[in-house]
Image 1 (cartoon, one colour):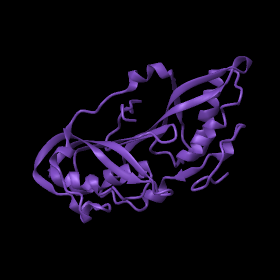
Image 2 (spheres, rainbow, N blue to C red):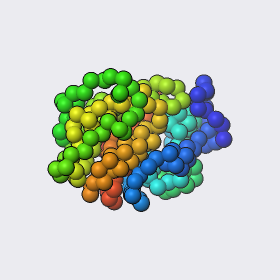
Image 3 (cartoon, rainbow, N blue to C red):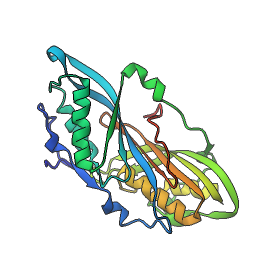
Image 4 (cartoon, rainbow, N blue to C red):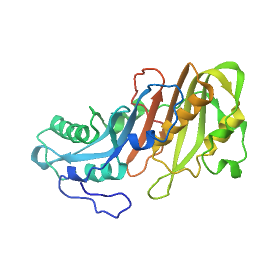
Amino acid sequence: MTRVLGKTVSAPLVYSPNILEAIPRSINRQQLDFGGLDQFFGADVWHLYELSWLEDKNQPVSFCGVLIIPSDSPATVESKSLKLYLNSLNFHRFEDTQAAVACITRDLSSLTGATITLELIQARDLASITTEPVGDLLDAFGSQCSDRTRGHQSSVIEVCEERAEKRWVSHLLRSLCPVTGQPDWATIVIDYEGRAFDCESLSAYVQSYREHQEYHEQCVERIFADLYRAAEPTRLMVTAFYQRRGGIDITPWRSMLPIHIPSVRMGRQ
């Protein structure tokens, strides 16, 4: 395996599955406290905007793709290595589109230890999977970004006695790449039923990730664990629509209950 994290690596011109780099999920999960929750469900939805290879008579073809990695996979894939891997297909000839999809899913399933799915979409059809989440806007409650919100702090979460069935949305989730330190922006959606959260404290909690360094999937699982531990709700689902970097965006979904994972994206992605 070629290590690409934190390195300058030229885009390969030949098919290079060895450039893919796995990130074991257990490393981060060992640091999290899920309270009494024994199991959760979900997946990571990767939207791929730069899929291209050669087919009949070396004619280039181009697609967008929806790649789904289940959250119970032993590992996920590092995004830079995935970008380089996909670039390595640009001059590779496949017999047909099905052969290309089979190759990509085989390589990634082998890397992650789970069954990966890939759906191809024409660029003109992206509107069919583009949506905007509806819910109570946490950003409207306001919360000054002070010293207490400069590092991840679950202690700012306040839980009320009354019960609530809510969907909260915030466009202010910002975290940092653990390798480069560069900012990653997302819209976070919290579907919830249980003892109500104080909205200002929940807004402050989301803002506390502004200088927190973790991968997208790890941030979502940390948020999921913190909210569950704080209130032990009867229903909780956390989704973060992270904006695109390097032709790829990632939307992790985590839920207390089994769910069907949609392929949707937001316009800002």
